[in-house]
Length: 227
Length: 227
DNA sequence: CGCTTTTGTTTTGTATACAATCTATGTAGA
DNA sequence: TCTACATAGATTGTATACAAAACAAAAGCG
Image (cartoon, each protein chain N blue to C red):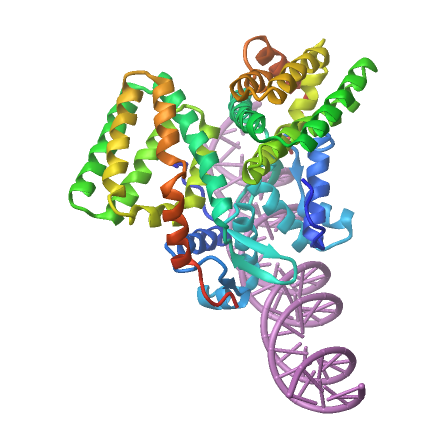
């Protein structure tokens, strides 16, 4: 989220870079993260690497087992469903509040983000849609006017990014997503908090056949050699 | 929450100890945490202390400004309300799920925790009530049968512990709290998810006169000399 | 007398060194 | 051939050392 530019510690930059690699799938769930290797690659010592890893572990992006090194967090299908269930509730809450508190300027921004998604959908460009979809959701977080909630939602959203990305590949998911967005926008702009909450909840939660889709895409993501 | 006993890193032990001091009010919001001082006190080098601080910063318990040291996180009244607003939603979600999914064994445990609170209330013992109240709420988290949700709720609960503690000192708060617990238990045991959610939400959220109470107790907590 | 600049001290951030523990390979025995 | 154990190697966790930045205080200047 838009923060005042604070000078980043080296370890924070490392953390962002490593997180990016996890999100983009370069580092896959279960993959081992060797401190020395990372240090060599980034041209620093192990100290800032360790600090970055500890931060990522706190955020749930990786797992650090004492004396046994760090691995990219691997969530079971059940666990993922649980996470999406919570994400759905947070999004619903954002939508409920946003419907009450959104400003005219934010209404315009939300519509802009929504229309941008439409362009990506029409171009049948999942990667573009993926990014614009994030902007769309973040605009809703912002419009909730609860900055803590927005931060929490954003953090969990980031944690789920690798899996969201996969889901967009599922047939017709992009079109379905867009029309759901439309209904969400309508509810928020008309001030219907409960409607927005309900639609966002269903938009995010993984259930029914989407669970099967998730499991199927997961096996493709999983790394074969955890060592 | 009950986890399999994993050998703790020294830095993790430090983190727990420092967190405990923050929660109990020994370290007050705004107070500076000097790495060398902590290292000397615990008889370790700065390295594990730093790692503990980074972890606490990730959890939001402290704030680390680059090159300017760490201070105990100090939340504004507005921020605190936002946090309680999210906590209320998470608790409501736990209650809603718990009403549907709670097992007979968990029902018994929940009742046990509730009756223990009754004893503390009758003894007019806020400290005891404070701890038993935590157990009561954690039982609900567990009964949601969404382990991720339970972890998130617990994490935020811990973050709000210093402030919850203060609130129990407010006149009659303990008795009010207990009778609210009673209604919550009734809803959960009767399988009324929406009722449980609604009652938990109101039980936790800070609004109306309780906001004034919170602000009043906050100024007592705030440290005078941030240096 | 107040403000700016400069110098000295403290504290953080990173690099390196070392000790403890875990993993893996190889060997001996059943 | 499989299992148990011992040893060697690799990797983590912690201590120490050093460099850079922030902070504090004193000196110089208007």
